[in-house]
Image 1 (cartoon, rainbow, N blue to C red):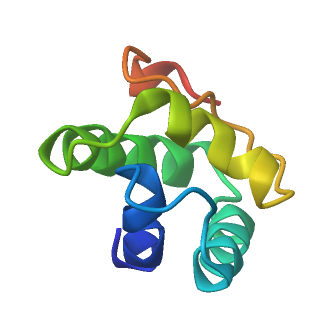
Image 2 (image 1 turned 30 degrees about the vertical axis):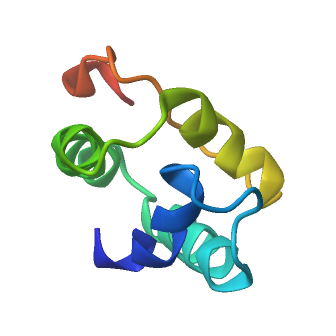
Length: 85
């Protein structure tokens, strides 16, 4: 979760584009999420964090595209993390 702290200003609509460090960290995190178990665990961390930090879901969905990263996990606050493969 700490890896995404540079993204917080973007995810909470304080800035209009993700900072370079944010995108670098998104790419690293995506590379590390190489098993279903890791992706499920990340999902279980991100869901409550997104709520507590007041992350805008639409902005969160846009982040991978803006960072040019194809993430294998749907970015959706209603997702059941246990269904991620």
